[in-house]
Length: 166
Image 1 (cartoon, one colour):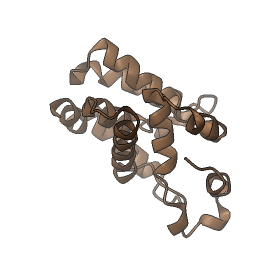
Image 2 (tube, rainbow, N blue to C red; image 1 turned 90 degrees about the vertical axis):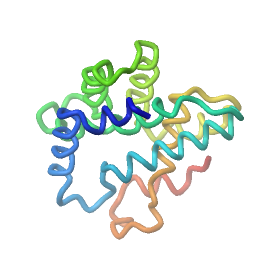
Image 3 (cartoon, one colour; image 1 turned 180 degrees about the horizontal axis):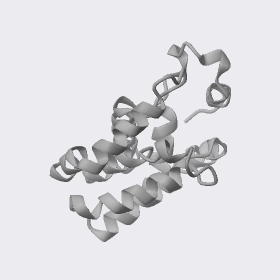
Image 4 (cartoon, rainbow, N blue to C red; image 1 turned 30 degrees about the vertical axis):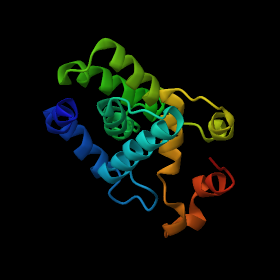
């Protein structure tokens, strides 16, 4: 997982991650931190194994997870863009520098760009064979421990999430 380590130690990634932490410092809802990123990677990999029955390249899962929310800190400066678009742009900058090949970059960018949007979960869950991006989408949603959240009553996301299943 050398390429994942390159992301984690990349100066720009560390700067962006710190910016995300700073922006969400007083956030009462779920944070887009390293714990969330790692949970998404692990869940996505497990879902992939359940569906495919064979392993895939872990750097794809961890690369996508580490970068999927990395643009959150830019949202205030670019309010017309979704965080997935901002994150994908940053990922496009860093992935080649960390040794990811063009095809791998495309897979990761597609997953980042399509990981938002609660309305797709039931549709994706019903599909027998899911793409990498669809599995990643589900993992991002399943990674949220809403049942333990102190801000559950105020969260718009929790209500939608509770009625959706995988």
